[in-house]
Structure formats: C-alpha cells, structure tokens
Image (cartoon, rainbow, N blue to C red):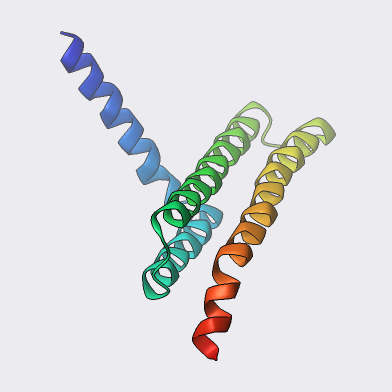
Length: 120
C-alpha cells in the first residue's frame, strides 16, 4: 500500500512539472539552464563546477516553480487586482530575480576564465 501511495504522489509531482512547461518564465529558465549545461560540456568543466552549476539550475527552476504556484494561488484567491496580491506576486518574483542574479554571477565566475582561455 505504501508503494502505491508513493507512486501516486510521484505521478502528481510529474503532473506539476508538466504544468510548469505551460509557464513562459519557467520555459525561459529551463532553456537557459540547458544552454548553460551545453556550455559546461563544451568547456569541459570539472566535477565540482558541475555540482555548482546543477545546483544553481535546480535552485532557479525550483524557485520559478514556487513563484508560479504562488501566482496561481493568488489568481485563484482574487482574480481581480488587489494591492496585497500584487505585493505577494512582486515579492515572489523578486526572490527568483535575486537568485537569478546570484546564479549568473556564479556562472560568470565558472565560465568566464574558461571562455577567455578558449578565445586566446
């Protein structure tokens, strides 16, 4: 019975991931993550750098998923404009932006020296 319950929960999670691909910002973040992963292969980053890059991609995609869930809930609770709903959505989007900026800095630290060597 526990395995059946676990598999059902897993199916729900997969449905959630499938729903995320209907969200424009998630698709953009996913595409950026795939480009970064391709760059990692091309520039032959080491194991530690892969761990950092994969963790960064996972954080951004997870935060984008949470942001989408919060926005969906806000729209359900109050489909009309409300200043508090706007504040909630802005804070949620701000969390994704903060992480995206920091992850971009991590990407620059990892990739820029390799790109410079590659260009020389």
